[in-house]
Image (tube, rainbow, N blue to C red; front, top):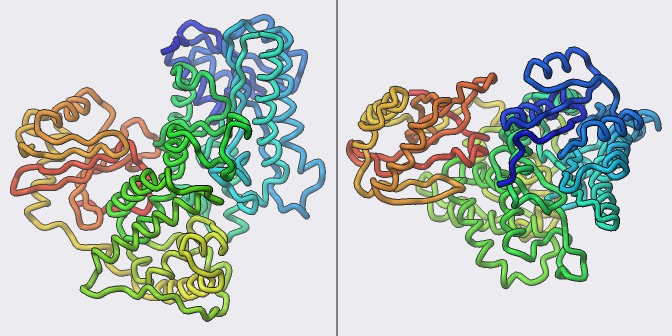
Length: 562
């Protein structure tokens, strides 16, 4: 593990948003942080945290040269940027279109110049702040139409990524010992000023609320997690050599560069991983989206995670024999779709099989504004659709895939996929006019009592009693991390909670099952952080399923307190 303590760090645009989150994380590691920003009020707050402050503009080349020469930073973070003017391509002027180029790209260029020309000390790292928008037409894919109001933003953020590679080439040629890397948040961060402004613009055009628009991205990426992840990237040697890294809520840091060059790669679609490490990274990045699909197909966030795990196992098994895959993301969703259909066949609800045929007749299109509201439908409402209609609506209106891609996932024609989509939309509109049905059964009285006792012990930090409640063969699934069986092994898990102080707990049920909802005392938003599903046999705890490292499962979960 590399040390950042007592190292000099210069961060541009570090007085607010994600820049401030990086400042805070690095100060916690006792780095010597200097912040360059324009707003005096934000800089005053940064100084109170213990950082040094310089008021100025990161697009001032002379200022950047002077700061890098004077400070000799071990780490330079180029984070300064502007809010794009939001409008469609025909509404943009060249001036509005190029705002991000004239600020973000310009500041990045001058920061790179300062690092290379001074130069920074050997072994230095330069982090360039980009965006998940740079992944348009790449894998993991963001479709350009999803960024239709953002002007030149996509291209500017992609250019910053390319600039890192160009700078690394110069550093290698001149043997400077510097390494340039790119940071790409893979979700819109709605709590920052930039994220809120972007979400508001899209929400207004869509006729929905900011919160509803942000909900499409799943559980939000929190600035504090982003800051901690960037600090990890700087201190963990696993991330010392890569160039581009992606960040998403409650998932590992994801390497994103398609590298080495094509001469050493397979002929698969760009982004199709040829190494196990890259393949696992892609699965980790797509896992929250796979869960959004599987949860809505099964009507349960917990069953949906079961199907996701089956999907990942099947993908691992199929990878070596899959051959050349034209669209790896569609391939993964097809595996998820088949796993979900297997689940539905095995657990046919209401004692009857659900129709699997698709009518080839194309229905009339629905109202566009109403269609946009479909993404907010509850999980149990989706379950009232036939599986083909459910699949098409989820893929199109919740996840944003095209009809061609839906047909590929469902292994059917585009007209059939379109028919399923339109019929599903029409059915959901009809259901929306009806009274909301119950989300599921309440807990049995016996389970409620056992759950409440378990939660009371957690809040009282009575871990001796909790250990006594464990069955000898209790099974723990710390989702995304480990599975163990046996009371002795689960005791270590409880010991970890005993050491943590920030959590508080409430009893609830999800999908009719007992869960312990976990809240972070330090989270100003105050919402649930994740939950732990429990299973009892008699008074003994026989199963613990903890979603600490899979918080995306909260997306769509209907928590009902008991």
